[in-house]
Amino acid sequence: MVHGEHNKTRNNGGFAMIIFGALLLFLAPNIYPEMPELGIVSLFGGMGIGGIGFYLKFFRNRTKR
Image 1 (cartoon, rainbow, N blue to C red):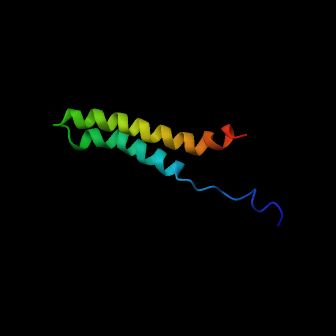
Image 2 (cartoon, rainbow, N blue to C red):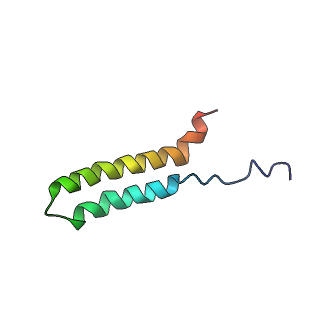
């Protein structure tokens, strides 16, 4: 089929990074409540990982054109 390459799904891990960032954002501060530094680091880490995953999933292929 001629358009087979165009219709392929691209699995670049963006969706997995979004899920992992969301889990880190919500669950990690609750696991060790006696260490607030770890909660702050996990908050920013979850936002960063989720943001990178969001970029990979939705915007990376659109900005190349």
